[in-house]
Image (cartoon, rainbow over all chains, first blue to last red; front, side):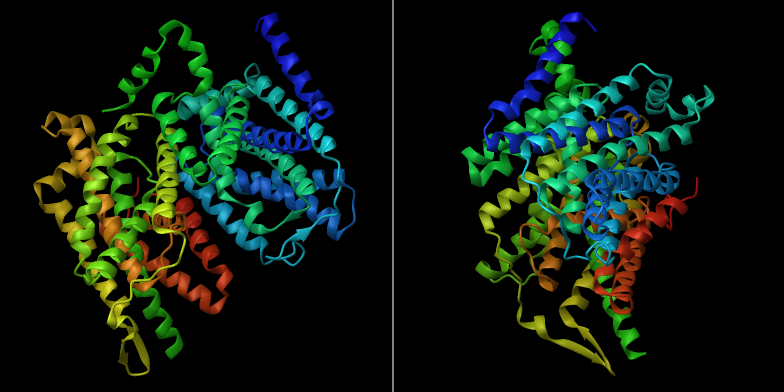
Length: 315
Length: 287
């Protein structure tokens, strides 16, 4: 990584951090949403992008984090920070308990098992009275959007640094080895079960923290929205759009797609979703390895890059 | 005891319909290795097609099924040739995402074209039922069940005994070897996808006669189809029938004995258990 690149990244981070000082309220709220989505995309990147397991269960971690904060603050009158820790503990416990059986599955089977877990969790939580059943919980309001903004940005920075650490640590190389060839990794002495469960827990930790911040910011949550599968699909789309298995791809994907869907929903209100679907289809066809890969190769091969992609993946 | 028998009847009838819904998904998944997240949206389109045929042309939903299936087959063939063919060899995430994108597009188009109102196909016999002693068998559901079983068994015979069916199975097993034996994969993939979507369309027509339709039913139906395909396994349409029946009965029993909110917990719980204990499905071959 060159000094120039580090400089650009620091500059972008500084501008983002200073945004609440000059941005409007609407911009700050859009920023919080985008940053939290970026954290989620980055958390999915750990298990999906680096380890190669298409998790549809990250919305479970998000929901557990939300409920951790909500239960701690509403039912037990504990401070927000304790709630965040409680949510994180819940998520990590879940990752260890269910990760061990579920991570034995591969490919589509893993994807669907995690999808089913999300459905089951939503139904279970809506029957627990401590979690407010299907009515949900209302948290004490805190009208301090700049604080939530900075918290989200801080979390995104930590998540991105963690992913950066993956690209140059023994643990990260182990995960990449599992993604490329799991039997091969096991033969080379990688404890695949342990590594996969740790990656699942790490991924879940960030998703839970994002969920906790979101719950306190929105001040309301119910099982439907906390364990929403479409949120999980969103994080996958953002990560894959930006470039799965890269450090900045998911962040870029989250920023670009959030901006696109925000512009669409204000300009062409009733067909925004339609455009979003078309963008997803076109992106998958033309740049299957994400924006990060386009940026790497576009200068050399130009428009032929897209045609090459078409040619390799069709039949 | 009567209540239990009645619930078992309802569950079985529901399960037959589930099976025919999942049949297309399992076929496409097994042959093209694409999990079609837009499958439920195609079921929804089929239901609307049957609704329009019945409401404006007066064609009975059961008689209109072949027409619905043929129209949906053409749509599926074109969709595979034009769009999905471009990513057939791409990694799994990409095929999942592209079908998700299609689902979003289809749902929005349906919402624009049909509005978000609930609709039902209401043929004159919709309310009638057959009494078996103390038990009641709703006629429309029974007919839907009969058609579903016929389609499933027909699909099984088709895959086993026709030239095209053999080509489809051969491609599912080994694409390279099938090509060497003269299978043209572009055409075969498109035909398979077309059959899958045609079945989805027929399932939609049946669904419209027993339940309400709106543009948003697709996503939940896709999830159910997943569960059924996994429980039954992908190798064999009869497995899908078993999967559908198992799911239909479990759901009905759970709703009766544990509570309505637990219906989905039970079906997805069974799904997770099957995945962990028998990943190739109840009737699947063990590795």
